[in-house]
Amino acid sequence: MATGEDLRRIALSLEGTIEAPHFDRMAFRVATIYVTLAADGRTANFNFTPDEQQFKCMMLADAFSPVPNAWGRRGWTTADLSQLGEEDLENALRMAWTHAQRRKPVRR
Image (cartoon, rainbow, N blue to C red; front, side, top):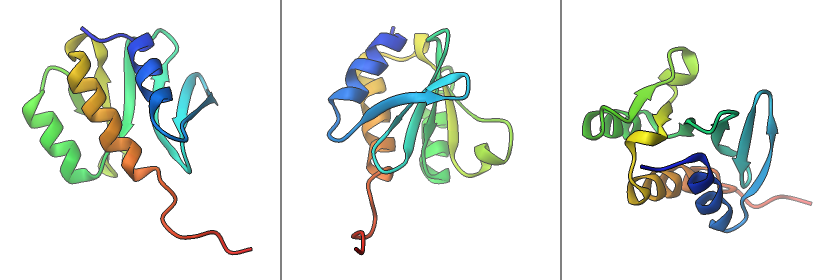
């Protein structure tokens, strides 16, 4: 059973990740936000592709569900952390983290 503290520890171990408030949640980002953690530490919203979201929701239906709005149609997915093992949590974080990397070099 994973916790919000597990998410924080693993996310901050991923290269370039910073933590900052985001509305009523804590956000973890590199170039963009890839996961947000609810204030109670029970759920997190991950930025997956729609295909990844479909796969996660199929394989771990008790843990993952699409965010019920337009963000969910873009791939944002809610996870009930109590339904995830630490390995599943780390895999989800790494998957979302890869999407948060800067895609193009910054022109100066």
